[in-house]
Length: 329
Image 1 (tube, rainbow, N blue to C red):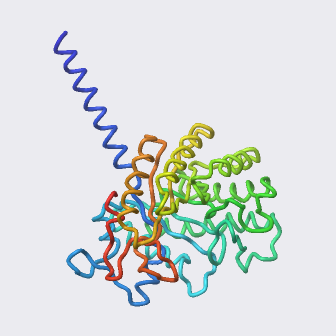
Image 2: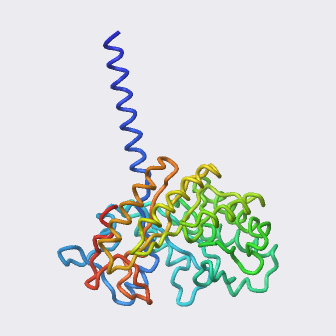
């Protein structure tokens, strides 16, 4: 009897350790590195702590980054972030064993709360045509990746769609229209990668009121999604307050919609590396505290050189080495 109790206890401990290990392995320590090929083309290189030039995907892997996020634009100027460019980066990530998220903007350039411009080729299309466009573009890119041996674990249908996408038809003034477009992307994703998780992604992860308004709206209109994604760029001077707010919002989203959450973008000015390190460590802790409902945290363009394209919130110093901001991963 005593032996059976000991055996049962040991089995229980083993199962708990296995579950903890599984959770640790499944948690996405991520980075969006969509600029990397354009940077390399412009002559930029990346270095390890000994100043040896090193593949940035290897550097990130060595820092604990196990997942890579890549944006897709429909017909971008210069070709950056088109299908071929995304495949090139995805293959490099896959070669390091990194899992892959594809972030569809449904635009020829940046899409965010302030701009959701239709691709030029879709500009005159009706809502019905736009639904077909979203489906065929999503399926086409994902089929292209799959046929080239790339596995995709997560797909973002739209980028920071607080105010909708594919304006004006897909604005949040019509949740019915928006939900239809979302479902076109959702269905296309599942047609190619049935097990991929579809993410709906909003900016300002600290703003619970906006998240409730948006997700109540699209849910009421019949939208389908698997994960709620958030952007998080807290001010260095008050990051603790913003981290507390995003933690409250994440818990509420899980409770209210019974869906897991993920921080798909985070960043802070590269000159604030020590503060960024503390912020990221705290954010990782708060996200992991949700257990299986906290799926991961992705640093946005950590490999961006200071002021690359005017951006200063990477995690690289002027000598091409990663700062301590990424240490928590």
